Length: 469
Image (cartoon, rainbow, N blue to C red; front, side):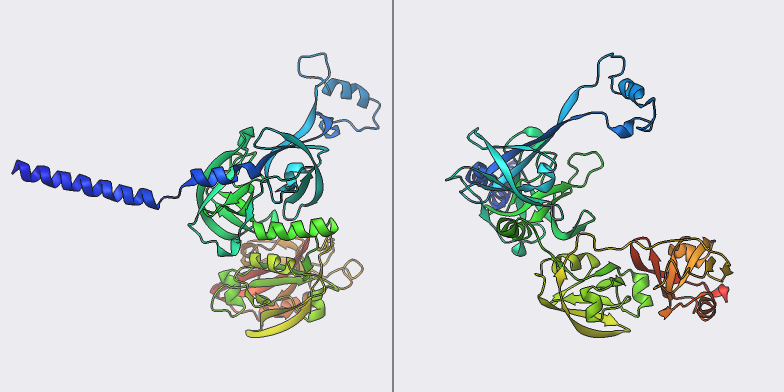
């Protein structure tokens, strides 16, 4: 019996070892990947003009005050020291990688922003002075050039072939530790961040820390598929959520910077928002989808093509638009002057419009003025409204909200100062018209409210409870 148990135990151990060996064979080999690519990865050390640690905003005295100089001397000293504060240079440390053997290097725009001197550290311990060919803050890409030839360079990959769960490796200089390799998987694709509306970011759990910015993200074939750019962190360090700029986006920027020194993007001219489940119900959709047009900019390509507030864009140039964040990168990559097709849902019906894309202006949004007026009108939504001042808002219909009490409007997110332009798909021409529309509103189901606030217009979903009738 003991012999039989021993044989069973031996068999189990043998099977376990075989299973572990099989698993080990499936794990990627990063050592060879690192050796083949480390020489094309560089550190980027950028410094700017020497700046004082003290700024004029730190002194609570106006500059034209006769006491300003006295307080300047007082605040310009270290605590407990009679000597002035030390001045320190503005410096930045990041990473980069060589994309051609004649010395072109990619990094992040924020690594070299507001700097005067840039030194690139190579794997053979050489330091070369670099000049900025151009930067694109919207994508956070910068192109540098060093005076050298026969440099090792990376191989550019195809981000379109990426899949969630795929192994990746990052190489960079976190905290100044040059040529540090970290590995992980792709956690998500097409991520949209507030700081990068025109970049469908690659999300990864490869460890990325300060100093990794601008470094390459490799696939297992040794191809660069992204530029490590941002981390999501509550501490400032790695917490498992990192974002990289897809390399095809970066190389498009590179081509434009090398050719013209600037980056041109396509512009549609709409302010968009996400379609929530409540808004989907209000617009008669069976599920949330697309990008909801909250405002069409004056004299924009969208206005010329006939787009309207309330349209839901579900496709652009035959590319599906599942969420609002997917639209800006699609539009941005279209060259100005090219014609594009926009598929929308309007009044429950799908339509296709043709639009000629124009160049994205520096400031594509407009600020709406908000003024106070008189003669409030109370309504069942729990808001007080007033007529618009035609001198301030000559081309705007609607009513301005002056007070918001408890009720459906407050729950929907309406605030004082908002202009209610449309209610349940009916345009509002004034307080009397608003009161009539409010009286006819249905209860127990979401309705749409178009408001104008600050930078533009947006839709909200509102539900009147049954007992409000």
